[in-house]
Amino acid sequence: MSHHLCIRRAGLVAPKLQHRSSYQTSRTPALITLSIRNHTQQATQKSSWTHPVYTQEQILSVRVAHKNANSLPDKLALGTVRFLRWSMDLVTGYRSSAAGLSRTNAMTEKKWITRFIFLESVAGVPGMVAGMLRHLKSLRQMKRDYGWIETLLEEAYNERMHLLTFLNLTEPSRSMRLMVLGSQCVFFSGFSIAYLLSPRICHRFVGYLEEEAVITYSKAIQDLDSGLLPKWENLQAPPMAIKYWDMPEGRRCMRSLLLYVRADEAKHRDVNHTLGGLDQDVDKNPFSAKFREQVGRVEGVVGERVKV
Image: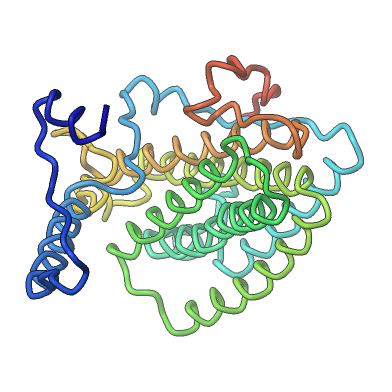
């Protein structure tokens, strides 16, 4: 039975084949324009990585936590993060409100935003570097990656959305831009080399880095609740943040924004500590939608709870 007969019996219409020279090409630009217009409209309505909707219980349940560094590689990763934390404190002029400083030396809204921008400009690098290198490795070895690339690139995208959100609240100075440029050049190069040498240590490093991010946002929320940041008390979140996190009506203030960002950082913390404990070559990503049911729940990632 010919394939044309099968198509007719199925109730379908088989297109008539034409010679190559008889094709009409005058409609091609119009079709391309229509396709681009439709794609653009869809892109403005929905992001490539749609952010999961957090419940109020989820964002309020986030706690500062720490994973003990028991092995030499973990201690190396933790020591590096602590050095970077000290460097970032110096660059951004961070001063803890618990130190009993005068109002002139305390953290202001501008200082917090500067710290957030610097932090997010650095935090957006590891996911992109790791995803890129694993992508190239998958191509080079002609093997599947088992869901790692998807999670890593999504993490990088999420951190960039944090940065763009805070850029809606202030305009960085020229010196700040130069510092971000310099730190990105150094950090990108260093992290790329480190990931080629030991991906496991790099994921542990990012896990500890995200622990510090959770601490940073928790302290900012404490300052806001203590009345130390009066300019933020009635400040509303930028429209892009409301759309990205799907923030409900009545929960679109600056405090809610910080809670959403902190929840993201806590997720990255747990994800990277988990990935740092897996076999980087054969284990499947337990956070990938495709392999989540096969791998099962991930528990005991971060053990020790600490106070802010």
